[in-house]
Length: 126
Image: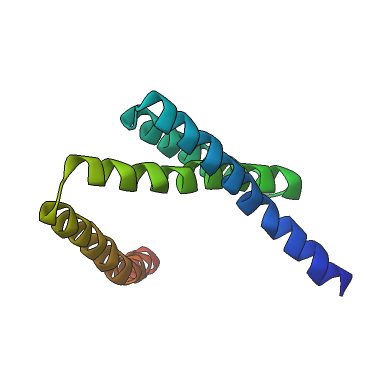
């Protein structure tokens, strides 16, 4: 039972860090009124965290740290992204723009497993 509880606490660390990061980065973006650089920095932080966590597979604390950094960048970037999309579009155009963004994201979620499966098949046969 203690292993399950400790696993739960370890997996909660990245989300706790992301929650704190979302608040701080979102507040900074709101105070300065600047969205593009905040979003770009969040994307780079997320990518660096994912690369960092993937490169330290033999150390759980370092991998969790990398995932925490990645979650801060990725999840903080979501809020900034949606605030940017609604600031460019107004009224019914905002509704249509958000619908198009969601449609593309859902289509990518549907197609990407097939692309991944096809790429792994071609890698095995080559």
